[in-house]
Image 1 (spheres, helix red, strand yellow):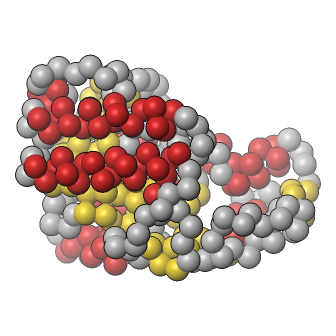
Image 2 (tube, rainbow, N blue to C red):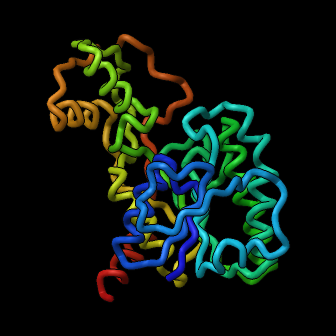
Image 3 (cartoon, rainbow, N blue to C red):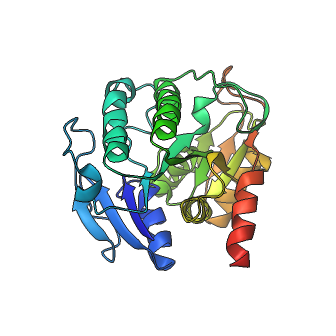
Length: 281
C-alpha cells in the first residue's frame, strides 16, 4: 500500500513508519522536520498547519491509498491553547485531502476525548473532555465523521491510552523516572499509585496502528490498547525493575488528583479482531 503518515517525526509517528516499512509498504513520511524518520521512507517536509493547500493536495502528497494523520502540536501539554487554535487547520488539511480524492483516512485520537470515566471505554462511550487537548481531538473526530461520510471515505479513529517506551522522548511519569535516575536521585515523590490504567508499549502500539491502516473492513473508533487495567504502582515498580533503575518510590508524597479515574481502560475487541485477521493472512 501507499501510506501517507503525517506527524511522522513525532513520538509515536517514527515507530509507526518503521512498522509500516517493515511490512513492505510504500511510506511517505510527512512533517515539518524529518531528522529522526527512517530514511527508507519517502521524506516530505510539509507544514500541514499552514492553512493554505493546493487544490490537488491528494496528488501533491503522492495519491496515497490511506492517510494516517498523526500530526499534532503539544500533545503532552494538555491545556496548551494551541490545541484549540490549530483545530481549524487540521480540519482544513484533512478536508482538502478528501476534496481532492482521498478514500481512506485514519486519524490518531486519544482517551482524553472521553474525559472522566470509570471502566472500559468502547466506541459508544460518551465523550465529555476536560482539557483543551481532549476538546480539540473530540471536535476533530466529530467533524471528520461528517466530512468522511459526505465524501464516501473510510474513516478510522485510532484511540490511544497510556504509552510506555522510548521514554526520554515522552513526557510521562516513565520519562520523569528515567530523568531522575540519570540525575542520580534515589527517591521519587509519588501518589498512592492505586489508580488503574491501560498501559501499552510503544512498539506494540505502533504495530497495532499499522495493522489498523492496512485494512478497511473494520472502521470507526478503534481502541489501540492492551484492554487490561493495571495499577500505576504495579506498572511503575515493574518499569524500575525492568530498567535496573536505582530509585525508590515515596508513596503518598503527592495526593491523588480528584479528576483521575480509579480505573479506566480500553475495550480492545476491535483491535483483537483486526490482529487475528492479519495473522490469518
